[in-house]
Image (cartoon, rainbow, N blue to C red):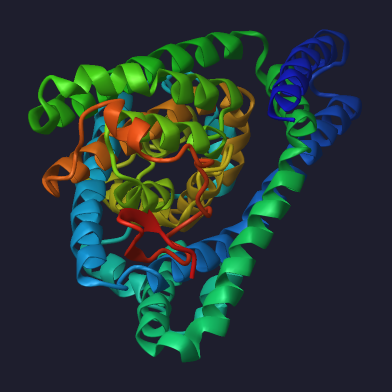
Length: 443
């Protein structure tokens, strides 16, 4: 299905360019017919964006509440979880900061000249530090959800998750409800993504009709500069991993080649998850570590997606000629840092984060249509980066615990069970020993 969707998206891109250019050269730009065509194209992408926005609040709430509720079942789990979260925070700051530095250095959006569209949006909302901190805490969770206020939803989810964890059995029905909500949103996301080829067609056709084929040069520049930035991030992540793993970092790269290719070709981190479990087994990571850290990382450690979120947000501001101060960019960085923690690793889920962040800072949300036209290619690179980041994080934390075994031999000693774990968080994970082996036991 994923490969078929990719093909359909490519077809949508090609048709969008052809139809958009045909409208540009055959329909007078100041005519009512031209406005009709461009509004029709815009409607296709707007419907898709509205459906993406629909998923924001329930997806973040369900994912975070269920994930946090399962964190603290034992002292070992708490210790490993603390180390994992510490690593995720550092990696997140590196990813987002590098994205901001590179997009400001390379400035791929400068020269696109969408200032006319920006005038309709108005001035960018400017928050000082105190307003930002006050804005984080919700007065009414239902209002926060109605407005898709990501940070306030995250704060409520944090309290709810910790509270449900403390309630134990009494809170289990609500935890199961949160898990079901997260799964429902992922299912709906799958349905929404089937509209992606139509949205791509509409986005590209509208952009080419309005701005001509010159906009495609901007896309080529954006892709090139984004992949250069991802390459630098890979070097940083693997370099930091080498500090802890030393020479074994080369072995890790060799072992994760297959899941990397799966992630890159499908643009889905979760498509690579079973193979990544198996390869980490072969590398020497015990399943009781990978069974906890890897699913946690799939919700909280999306290095490629976070770099993309910062890169794309500032690119959109540049394309609309909006000058963002350093303080505003830092606030955007902090927002992305927190809001990205509630997004599941499914194809193009980063659009949810970007859309919510643009809306929060009163930046033109319609700018998402600019990047969505080539989002499939951007997604392939950032998804592969997510896999690299989580493989390094899991291996380093295992090394910290003193549990990293020798390659291959560790895998040969344990049964070749299917490498499967529940999606998102640490649902039902219990670090107990059974028959002399460390296994995650479903609760």
